[in-house]
Picture 1 (tube, one colour):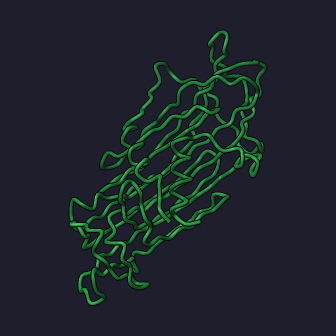
Picture 2 (tube, one colour; picture 1 turned 180 degrees about the vertical axis):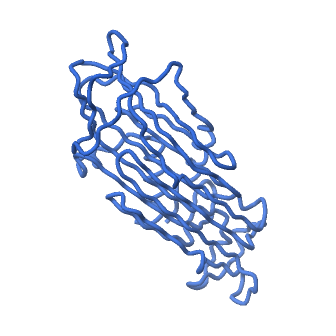
Picture 3 (spheres, rainbow, N blue to C red; picture 1 turned 180 degrees about the horizontal axis):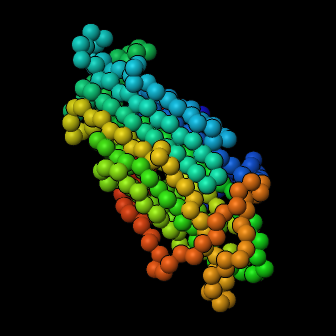
Length: 305
């Protein structure tokens, strides 16, 4: 799999949220996944053509890393003797386990071709290419977990909401972190693009669960994706490698709306007990910048081979 497939599948998964039946069939109990990629392409007519990319993934959520900062992609313009080639480098890390996700994306661009012309050929490290200068660059880190939680109470119908603590920072150009949580098919998207450090506790909407099991997926993305037409040199870091943690889950009886505290909730393997908590109302739902994130994702969803 290359990063074109990654962007299509993981970013689509991040927005859509609900795990596919294929995923659940492959991982009937739980699924942890971590993906990192560095992508350089050409954006034309809402399509992105890949020019160079690197990609590493783990289907069990192990720590994965990509680092080409000391040997960046190079693009030499019309001839190989160009003394100032465009260079793109980055570092991306991701790690996932149930209840905890970590992502980090760092990148730089020097000598960007701000006057992009698809008719100007260039020379890469691998030889001549007539696709035109790159105008789309993304360094991405993704981490996600999926699990089916077991409710230990007697209520036949209840509502559940999740609380997560997200800590990280953004610096430089074109950086953001996004969290998508899907509880029994209902998704909440939280977006963090403010500069500097952030430490926030976010709460999902309360969702009705009809039986004693609920499917939960959390996906975290950190990205460096500068707007190349605005300058010639860029650098940035998007990090939530300090961590994202599952703080707890609130359960309410569907009939009485009373908080249920004297029960246990465990993941499918029994290796993790989710803290059952009471979330004050109104909850601190911090859904920030959703439209911007969806626009960013939409821009990357269609790719040419």
